[in-house]
Image 1: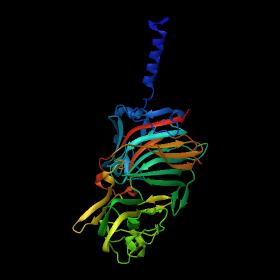
Image 2: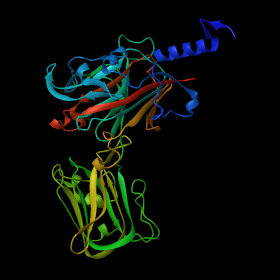
Image 3: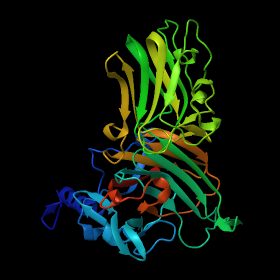
Image 4: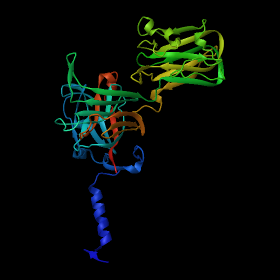
Length: 423
């Protein structure tokens, strides 16, 4: 066998491969595999950052804002982007800098990318009023093809909201004295849901049912139905409120007394009677502060088999204003007994407590958005046809909730960013 400087040819080739791999981008951690669309074998990893290096090395691949922000409440600085223990932390601080009262972190890649699958795994900052973002946006002059664009793969809002946006930054226009641009946005809530069903395995007999919530703002209940035990089943309130054979809704009996904690404003638009009219577009709207409750009292004990209610409102195909906690109880003659409860802060869908994965498949024809490997939105691509850097940003914004000192010290924690292209 021929030797090269005392080494076998095979060993020499092996050393070359090791040297080459040592200077390439780190390979994905096998403990957190990507959630690729379709067949994973069809995709090739072309770029990734696993943040498994010293903080000073972040500047090799990323740039930072380092200055004030005109459209949000926080200036953003490299000091607020820290790599440690295998993750990137974008940190909120209550401090005056850059003419603003808060600081956050905002970075983007030096390299620009085009069509492929983009994925980021991260946790939200654990406070209202924060914007936890993974996005693409063109920089520089007008592109030769398409428009200047922004694709927000996720503008995440604590605790469990995903906001996806597609912005056209080329076709600016004036409206109401302000400069505006065409955009298309869709928001998704996870963990909460518009309709709840409390199906009782063992029916209960009671004279009173109570619903309570400490949701931090006013909310809406479109329908609230308390049913008898019915072998023929119960309706789906989101698709049909037609009577089922043998079904009795005890709330609609003339001797049922209904009391509520209050309502948002005076007038029938917000009144308790709207919970009984069979129309989701009319609602009882609670008061904004304090504990919210509804109590149903029957003239005599009723045997209950199922309770169903719908909350929030439907806007452009998306449910908005969903409650983040509730409790339903019945009166046993001496005390209230819990039947069902939900508390988002104690549940699995608090995106500040665990990592979740956000993805975008970007082709010349389509934009497909993913959450934990499942498609949540698909749109025709009509102008996003030019290279873009990848952005990771934390911001403080008033439309994502109350701005309080609870924001201070919170962080958006990023596990990895990966880019794939079809083989």
